[in-house]
Image (tube, rainbow, N blue to C red):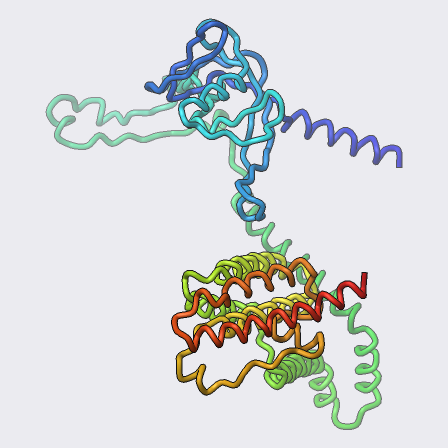
Length: 432
């Protein structure tokens, strides 16, 4: 155990030294010119300028969020180093902070001494890709005089014939100076592939044998004691694994069909969030049809926006929560959508014929009827109930009536809302 602990510590030290947070860089290229005015760095837009980095450079991954939702966050790299600005050594965080006056937006709550480079469209010039790149030299080899043998006939014929006809050379390679290539080196990849295939096949056979050892023993006993000719028993013993595989596939398909049929009978979708999105769009269209001067419209629109956020968060975490918790969350969102739909339908302006045909609204006599009239569920908090009651009172106020019939209808509706609120106030006081 001590040796393993020592080996793990050594690997950790090597990883820290090899990929640590301190990196050296030669220069920082910025599309700004940096000057010093009274000991304070100033940036002004210009062509790209290279600034020498003094000392080490430290980097850090920093999450920056523009809102409270998780999808508004991004991870950026922030750095801590010093550059040569106007002949003085200045911390990069001070230089970046001076760019705020030019309209550059920097993240809030940055660690002390750190600032991003990407916000200022900067880039690093690393030592390995810098100015002193050395090209490799071409090595030459001097051939011996007896390494090339020229035919005698060719040596006697010079001049025009040599230029007209292609030169025929006979090259002789000295076996002592050229190492012989291994005849089996070209087949290394083939041998490695064959060995890998054999190892994989052996591993698969071992797994199958371990998982099916009891069934195999039973089949072998049946093979030894079975009836029929020897070829028929051998064929049945060899075909047994394929029969098991076909039976397993058939059973899996039948269970899938049965589960699909149950889902269809229960009325549930494979993706319950798809139905939630459909209901959200329906409720949003219903709220959008309300008159623009109704304060209730803004309240319902804000609740629909919050339901959109809850649905998006639920889809992002759908792989992390179980099916039961997912269905429970979907049911909660559906209840809120039903409540918003009832409120929007009740607040929609009715035609004169509908008002004349409708009877006077009944005053609620129980808390259940009070919650139903307000479009709420009994689990709603008291603050939400008060908020909905105030919004309903403002939206159904008689001053917004278009004619006398509309005024009478609004007065009856206000009486119904006040009666429901009186019942709920009594229940809240009794519970307190």
